[in-house]
Image (cartoon, rainbow, N blue to C red; front, side, top):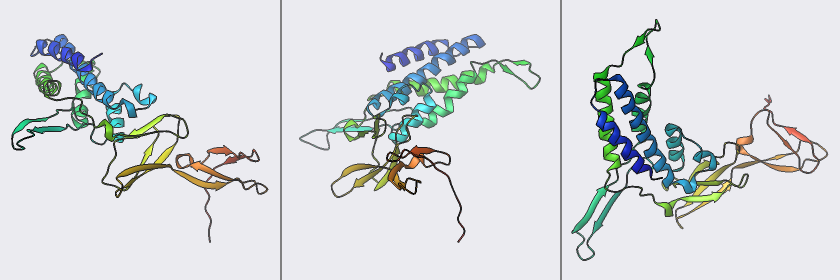
Length: 262
């Protein structure tokens, strides 16, 4: 499935219904535009599928999906400018285009708003309220213009795949990845598998221009005084009430917070 083609079809059908004085027609137009928004977010997610977990790929809600994208790729909702010049004459610009991408802010502004047009409205006395067709028409037409800009962007789906940093989670084996932020020397990254609590410290070596990772763990010992076996616990597992079993003596250790007064 080509998401952009599906989005284009949704936009064409919605545009054919606008403007309209019919509530039913406007609701159908809103539904088409909502699906158009969804397709554009799914297309963007597809560009980063190499660093998305199975849990991420099951996420259908656009607002949550784009939030996850921005966690692993801070510029996922930003367009890329592509400039090409002549090999013989650098001032001879052959192409200078900017990719138009649907931003998280734009998605948040329109998605739930047009979704509200699909539901019955009522006042405080539970009396039905008719759609304000004038207002709805303006809202849908503004969104149509925005979506047209994105769908007909001169360049699309430009993702610096070579720059994506990926590795397999040491706890669950799920693929972990991100679009590195080279402006900081160290940052945190956690596995996106909802059933996994692994987290990592990502370090950027500015001299060699390389990234490395290490599990974010803390050292502890078994509470059995006859054992005191050293163990490593994932930082995200350090929560009151969590437990682990000592691999040496088999004792169940329960994590708890305490206060000591000197």
